[in-house]
Image 1 (cartoon, rainbow, N blue to C red):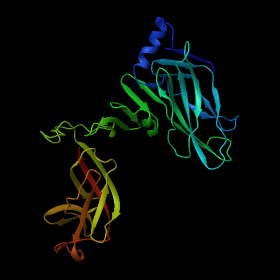
Image 2: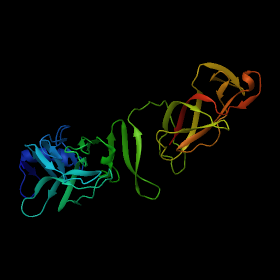
Image 3: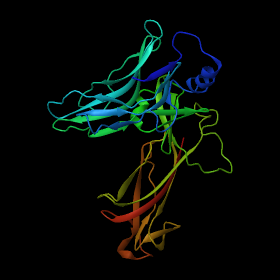
Length: 319
């Protein structure tokens, strides 16, 4: 394997120091560029995967690979198996060494056990590879690499969170930022927020003087078509549960016509309107009541509308 390393035993010159410090100080693991150490299927080796050229680092060691390296998975007697490609760093002996290895997994799509003893033996996850019985090529490759520079860490798949889960971590995957925070018991937990932001003219703390007074408000919104149940109620499941609680929900009928119900003018479809929100709201979901006029008469009594197809638009604020 044509791998050269900076950071094992021995001295480091000025050029090596300039290469090492900006990256190994940015995160525990990473690769330099988006194409570095990318894992692809081999077209010439049964159950083969290729590790691309490039550079990556882990726990104070920067490695550069100048030749594509092919690894071969073991046979699969039945079903499927998920193996993991890692960069293995061994600090034993004089000098230390880095190699690429396939760790055999199980039928479960999860990261198998790996070495996690920096300074002795440590494995940097690069990809999760599915091998299937009867197939000579990998059936799925999930990219586990991460990229870190100038105060930010970016990953390709949520499975990478399994090895980046130290408290204080902030990982961007797509448009979602994952923060490794502490819960009320002091245990690390993942919280999410969307990188698309809406400027606020002003906002106070969520609970002034309370345990959550430093947490900002979070806003979610959506529109969907549903049918009310036999009691005239429906349920909105929030795309992301609010980390702490729900402040309020605003609901609007998503159809064209307008009627008057209970002193409120709102949009509706025919004689159907969203009116009279219940108090059954949690950080996970919200239950509402669908109302309309009896017999379609706008001057008639307001009744619950059971088994009625409708569109509801909603905005939820929580913290």
